Structure formats: C-alpha cells, structure tokens
Length: 169
Image 1 (cartoon, rainbow, N blue to C red):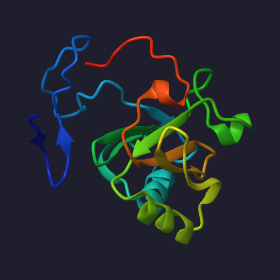
Image 2: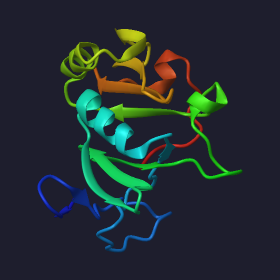
Image 3: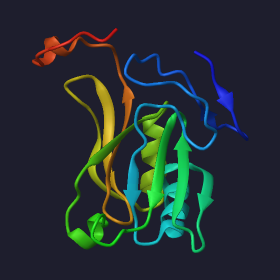
Image 4: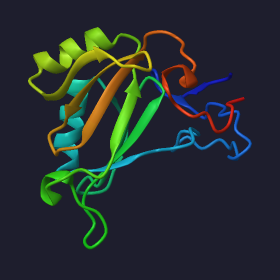
C-alpha cells in the first residue's frame, strides 16, 4: 500500500483498494472512503481541545473567520465545521448526538490515560468487548461521542453471535 505524505506525518491519497471508489490524488482530501464532518460551536476551540485531549494534528484550516479545519490521528481524518443555519447543529445545541465515531489507536491504554488526565468526560470505561476490542467512550466539548479502540485479538464475528452477510476481501 503506497502513501503520499504532505508535511510531517500526513498520510493522504492512500490506496483504498476498493472497487466502489475512484482513487485520485488530491492533496486537500484523504482518499479514505469516509471523511466525517463534525459540527462545533467554535471550530478553533474544538481543534485546540481535540489536539490537546485526543492527540489529533491539524492539517489545514480555511475561512475568515475559520469555518473549517481538517485534522488527523494516524490514518483517521476528520473535518471540523461550524453550524449551518437550517442544515447542521452541534449535539450541545440539539441536546443529543446523532452519530458516534470509532478511532482505532495503536495503544488504547495510553490514549485513555491521556484523555482522563486532560479531564474529558468518559462515559464508558476502558474494557475488552465481546468482539475482542479494547475500547473506551468519551464525549468531547460539544457532546460528540467517540470510541477509541485497539484490536485485542482476531475473532470471527460468527463466534460471538453476529450473522455474517458478506465476506470481506
């Protein structure tokens, strides 16, 4: 799998090996299959918080005032945006979340310790799941829910009760 790097540590245009996507080079966007956009009341404050607490790195920002920031942690990329009238809002304003992100990290114990040290709100303590992931759940400054995980061991989904509908290639 090839990687192109822009600046220190930014993995962009990585091959997705997917028949469902077209792989093109664009230094403004990763070629991963999904780029989640998270809505925050203050994009700059959110970027500072996510950097400090979760260890993400800012890749770029745009707008005056800042209206978007792309960030990454390993191969996981996210886009921070502000609310759009009549279209998007933060969980803090809505009073509930609408999705959850799972980020796979190489050392979930160290990541968990950092998150706790920084005072984030942990809503699920670090544990090993039935499907053999070590994970914990945390809410960010605007109420988005995150799961940070590390694979504990390989396990066939059927062995813990899942119905496998299609095989991954």
